[in-house]
Amino acid sequence: MSEIVTPAMVRTGLSTMSKTEAIKEAGRLLQNEGYVAEGYVEKMQEREELTSTFMGNGLAIPHGTEEAKSEIQATGLSFLLFHEPVDWDGEDVYLVIGIAALGDEHLDILSSIAVTCSEDDDMEAILASTTAEELLSHFDEVTA
Image (cartoon, rainbow, N blue to C red; front, side, top):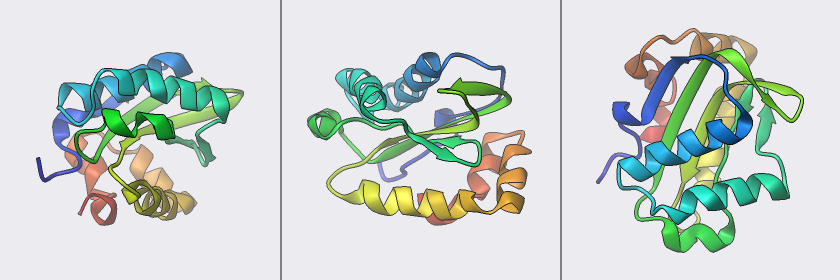
């Protein structure tokens, strides 16, 4: 498993759902593709209860707690792109990126995602994506 994301781990054109459902779906995509064990999804919810993973600019990046590291089989990302916002503790979220990372890789991944999504023009292009391939093309530096 050399890729950290595949088109099977990307959902675009989604209607809104609850924050809890969005976190579960992001985790389920990672689990279904063999990147994490079942317990990781629960740890993503626990992490969210500790502190919000809302990053601003319509982006949330749910990930597991430090204790969840043993549940990670490989570094991977899942993407959920909504055309109707998810209510993330009063903030509108259109892009949810689930993260599972071995070792300290999550720091580099988080940094790369933050840079990619920080510019309004870039985020507008990302949110206009209609296919997995189109969405992933905006994250070449993150997924390389």
